[in-house]
Length: 201
Image (cartoon, rainbow, N blue to C red; front, side, top):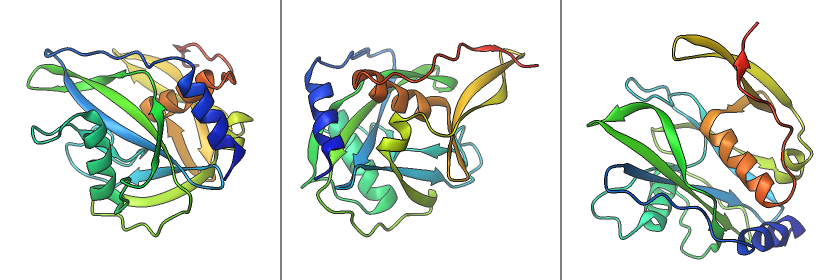
């Protein structure tokens, strides 16, 4: 078992996650899955009309359904639906802080996402569904070392800004999913370089 898994477990045990429980908000959950070699599972979302995160590098997950017992169940159900991975036998290492999703609202409600972190002994065979264009495993060690850090232009509120990114071997990690990765690194005491939002040049 990778020593990275033990380090992540200790970091998440050190304090409880910050949760935002509000009936006024919609909720979603994602799964950050580490394999036995300490590599993290990412998906590339398929190009879909109406999906604000279409084509993005992300973690498996989605919105909570009325039939879900809780957000943990949401993360596990969505992971099995999207990539064919059952997390029933995986080790739950803990959860990261809830994150608000900035973007389009559904029925006037903002969306809050809870990231759960799991560990597997062996890397399974994955079966992506139509919502997933591809999957990739990426070493946590390279994320901890801040490899591939860069920037990209974006427009927020009509203003051009620059956002941090990470190159995952040709795939660009940014936005909410990078916030989750950086949240994990901060919990591990290995914070990423500080890159404030700033006007693009």
